[in-house]
Image 1 (cartoon, helix red, strand yellow):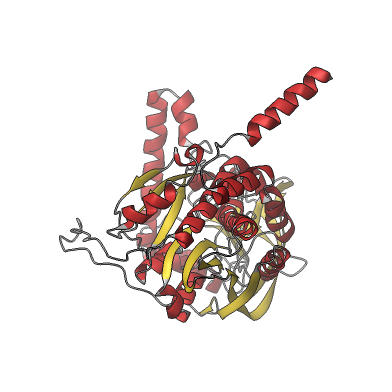
Image 2 (tube, rainbow, N blue to C red; image 1 turned 30 degrees about the vertical axis):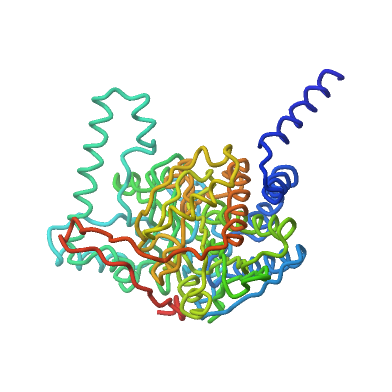
Length: 516
C-alpha cells in the first residue's frame, strides 16, 4: 500500500509540475488553475449528458442557453441571452424501427431533424428500393406503385469497413477492386437520377407527393458505426436515417424479392416559431472598456449525438477560459466578450447577426479567438489575411508555455475564411479574427455531425490545453498597449478564375428559419 501511495503521489506531483513557471504571475496562475482545478469534465457532463444536443429551435438549445447564463453567474460573470430572430421549433421524441418480415429484428436508426411525426401507432409498410430506369416516363410509372410503401433512397455501400481498415488488412488487389466497385456504383446511382428527370434534392418531395409511407436513407460517414444526421426534406411523412448494416440488409432483402416489412414509430413535436439567440457573457474592461477581445464558439449542434466535439468542446473551452480569466484576471484592460453563437450549422447565423447588430463592437475588436473543429489540441494558427498579424499574434503566443505551443504551426499573413465557422463572420467585417484549429482525432469521419459525437469522444487533456491557451491569448491581447492592425494582405490570384482574389464581404443572417 505504501509503495502504491508514494507512486500515485509522485505521479500527481509530476502532473502539477507539467508546465514550467514563467515571469508573468497571471500566466502562472491561469496555468495552475487550468491544470489543477479544471472544470471541463463537469461542464462537459452537464452540457452533453444533461442538456444534450442543441439543435436550433429545440428546447435543448434553450436549456443550454439558460444553463450557460447560470454557470457564468456562478463565476461572477455577467451574461444574457440575446435574441436575433426566430426558427421552426421542434422537439425530438422517440424513434423505434422494427423489421417484421421476413423475420423480426429491431433496427438501429433515428428520425432526421425536423422530421414529421408519426402517430403513436407508427407506420408499417413494405420496403422497396429506387428503380433503375431508362427515362423519366419509367420513373413516373413506378411512382404510381409506391403508395403506402417505405422507400430506401441511399446507395447501398459495398462495404461497412472504412478504407484504412481495408488498407491495413486487404491485399492491394482486393482493396483496388472494392474501390472500383464503389466508384462504379456511385456513378450508376448518380446517373440514374438523370434518367429519372429529377435531382437528389427533389426526391423527398416527389416520393411524399406520390404517397410513400416513409423515407429511409443511410448517410454513412466512412467509419465503423457512424452516420451523419442532418435534416428531413419531407413535410408530412417521417424520414429516417438507418445505420449502414441494417440499411444494407433491408436493401438486399428487397432486391432479392423477400419483400421486407418495417414498422416505424418516430415521434416529435412541432413548437411553432421560437426565438433564436446567442449567449453573451462579458468581463468589463477597465482602461479601454470600448475595445474588445472576443472568445468565440458556436453553441448549437446537430442532434444525432450530443454535439460533443461539434461544438461542445469549443463551447466549454471558451467557458473555462472565461472562468480562468475572471478568477485570475478579473479587471482586464479591454472588455472580454464570450460569444456562444446560435445556428452556426445553418450558415453562421448567430455570429453574422451579432456582427450586423453590433457594429460599434466589431469596429473596436482587438482580436477574436474561435474554436470549432473537434476535441484535439490546437495545432494551427493562421494570421487570417491580416498583413501585420505576425507582430501581435506571435507576441501573445510567446507568453503561452512551450508545452502547449510546441504543437502549434503558424502561417502569416494567411488568408481570410469564406465560411466554415464563426470567425469568418468577423473577418468579413474586417475584424482580426483567428481560428484555433485543432488536430483531427478522426473528427471528419467519426464525430463531425454524426450519431457518435458524444462525451466519450472528448480528449480532456487536449481541451485543457486549449482552454489555457485561449485564456492566455485573451489576457495578452487585452493587455497589449498597441491596437491590433487591421491592414489586409494582398490575396493574390484566384487559380480558378485567374482574377485577383477579393476580401470576403459580410453576409446577413437568416433571421426567420426552417419555416418553408
